[in-house]
Image 1 (cartoon, rainbow, N blue to C red):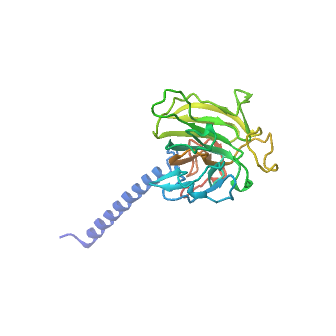
Image 2 (image 1 turned 90 degrees about the vertical axis):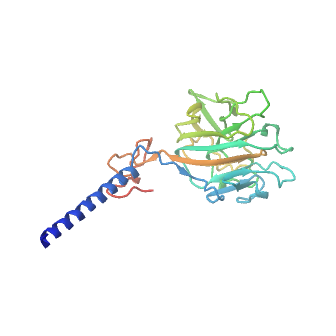
Image 3 (image 1 turned 90 degrees about the horizontal axis):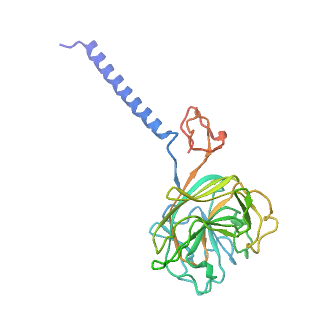
Length: 304
């Protein structure tokens, strides 16, 4: 017959074994959670509504989403003109709420339907996303485009044999440099292939402050430029106090474009490239390129 002492010893041993197993599982989970090489992509579009986004259309007050120009259906941000009588130069943008500096933006887009008949000819199968944009609240009611740098999306019809690059760069109220020289053209084409019809196209824009911007499709860089700064023309109706020509753009907002051509966006995601670069911190990431050790967390759960 087993003695009470042996029973207690066996129970204690089993409890210690369970605690050791639990500690091991928690340690493995903590290591997985804080894996410095795991890229923490964050969705900035919830798939349900435009929470976190602000609409600004030319000739309209901030927040006036005239006739549901931007709308969410089936997990997609849609730019639609089915409720319009005329375009009326209502160039518009949906701005994400956070000011950004070092990051990668990833999204998918596709073109659907026909452009508005009274929109400029260049609007045909044309849209884009603005980076380093001025804040929407700094735009007067009549301003046409934000002071920003545009990753321009272009496409072609399914039956066309014409070549038309996408992920080009355009510079409303800005200037850029390529290979040490200021670019004089307003828009510069990328080296991408032509995407036809209503297929989804996945793209990325890598922004490194005022240092460099890369346009990427399927992991391949199709365009790169440096030293984005305020300057140049194209933008009208702006506040002169905001357009400080020659000022380097190291941060700003991203904005999805609406300029007369129906287009759709989905899977809008963001990867921050600025953060804790101290390997001893629990929220260290090996892929960060800009140091912000004020965000470091030691001896506790990583900051989210």
